[in-house]
Amino acid sequence: MKILAFIWNRITAVISTVLLLLVLLVVFVGYRLASSGQSDNAVRLEGKRDYLAQIGQHKVSGSTAPNIIFILYDDMGYGDIGAGAEGNSMIATPHINQLAADGVVLTDFHSPSAVCTPSRAGYLTGRLAPRAGLPNVVFPSGANAKNLVFSTLSAPGTNVRLPAEEITLADLLKAAGYATGMVGKWHIGDRSPSLPNDMGFDSYYGALYSNDMTPFALYADREIAVKAPADQRFLTERYTDAATSFIEKHARDPFFLYFAHNFPHDPLHVREERSGKSRAGLYGDVLEEIDDSVGAIVAALQRTGNLDNTLIIITSDNGPWYLGDAGNQRGRKGNTFEGGMRVPFIAHWPAAIAPGRTEQAMAMGIDLLPTVLELLQLPPPADRQLDGRSMLTLLTKGGRSPHDYLYYYDGEKLFAVRDQRFKYRAPAGVFYGTDQMPMAYAAPQKEWLFDLAGDPRESYDTSDRNPDDLARLRAAFKAKTREMAKNKRGWK
Image (cartoon, rainbow, N blue to C red; front, side, top):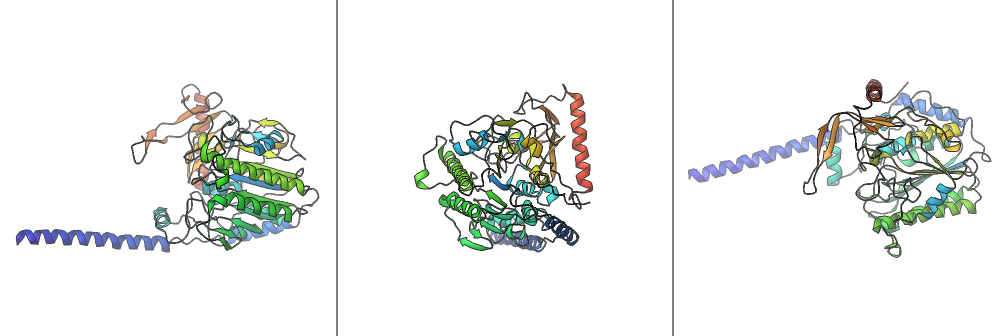
């Protein structure tokens, strides 16, 4: 009897512990869900409205203002296309290559972040992701287990959508008189007031999240057009049809089209008749179909007589993930080595960009909005700091970088700073793992200084050989850290 009593006591103790843990988990999840509401800054919202009203008083001329098409790939690597700095013989991208030959290629261009959401926030706002209030990847609203885990483990108060007070490129161009449309992947929030139609886009067709997230539905403006799970074999085709329709509809208006592909983000899909066409496997098949999509965009511009006065920009939100070519660089998506953030960049605009140029000056995705401001001769907002700088001169005439330094953030933490030649990486962990380990771990390292002119792979620490440059970049790193701590959102 004593043995049975002992066993029973042990069982009840285990049951009690499990029940207690379940209660604590429910309380924690309830607290996190209750505290996950996001509010917007009323003063900054008013500042945004005033600024856009000011822009509206100086609407552009439809006969002179260029159309703008911004094509953003998802996880395309620096070396994935033939028009990249090193070229790619495994994947045929003739349409992109032709735009590069007829335009300008920037070989030292960087995404605002090494992962999706903060990168897209940076491209659209001209601000580093901590400034824009969206430094981390966001997940779909709703009750699936993975989304719940990620949302509850994020820090309390973490934003789940782009703050409504942020001014996007679409907000700006709509106020300036452009027809604005978006096709493709949004991924900076799935609820109002931060949906595409809330943030400056007259029309929207696409997916609110990455193609590995569920539920994966396609939206036409605010309504579901293709129920989840959308068949991704036809995704590029659907997007291309929507993009060319937008161009043809607004052929006589100045227009802005943001075309954000979900590919080549994993999982990869193509139609059956396109499978097996590339030497680079399914990844190459996907990129070759997207290249044909670029060809369809160009053809639509030619049909409507808009090609000469349309600025087309092609780039990627970060470096490659599990597959893809990061080029002659260290790292991949998710880290602040060059392979995670240096991405292809092509600009094509026959009316203003001479063909066949390659520029080596460094630039970043946060420069897109300031470039458009200079292009249209519009003032920047007075109540907030823009981190980007105009690269209009670099694109049209060439020359040096608009930046003295570029800053590499992961989340809200600054990891590295660089100038045109040297890159400083502060003391931080560098992930190490073997194939049999289920998880890698961050092995602590001291500060490093890379000489990118001779070492683009960031293989050798040269801090002992270049002490003055080490001190200068370390000082820039510390100054930026202090600045962000004092005024993270950059309000004036």
